[in-house]
Amino acid sequence: MAVLRSRLTSLSHVILEGLAVSGNHRQQSLIRTSIRTAFFDSKQKELPNDDETQVRKINPEVDGPSALSRTSSLKKRTSVRTVKGYKPPADVEEKIKQIASEFFKESTNWKETLLDDRLLKFKFLTKCIDEFDHNIPNSDLNDMTSISDIVHFFQTAVHDTSSYEDLSKLDLPKNLHIQLEAIRFDPETDTFFDGITAFPKRPTVVSSIKYRHKYKGNDGEHHKK
Image (cartoon, helix red, strand yellow):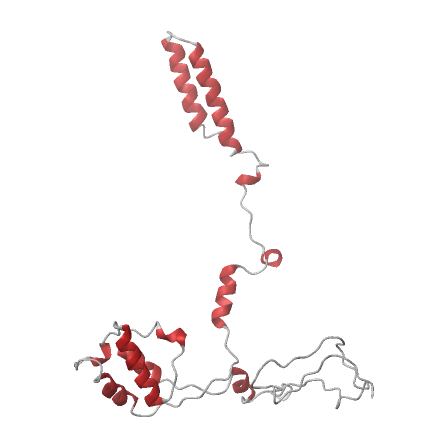
């Protein structure tokens, strides 16, 4: 930007000088030469201290991870949620073909039938869910564009264990142990420090409906006996 401003300033000076001179062909030629020099002088160097012309390099140690690396890490993450297990039967394809015949025209390439009609797609998927007792997540509905996608979905088994639980069942080294059950503080049973928690005034609340009956929370207060 500083170089451009300098060139424009030089150009304006040349134009003003040219306006003051009239009727002289040689001076007009000098004006044209000066204009070309002001714009196309390749020997003119940029200012070394111009911050606007310097490109700053990214330093991961200072700037942290980039947005692209964060997005890539999210794709690699696996969920630890427990889901309902599903074991596909052997005749998945035959059952789906029979259900499809109730809503779509018979065809030799019945798997390539497109699910363009939303109402028919809803009725067809609802019948398949009832038949196999296996729900379809909302995130997969948009990707199901043909009957072949439905067949592939209901032929895929779903494990009812999390990746954390699957890891604990592996042949682990002797010095590595995975604690599946959470160890929580209980003032009634943890009497080593007279029932005093390591985090006073910080209540522990079990918000999960599934684990509320299994784990007990506390209010973070020390109740003297």
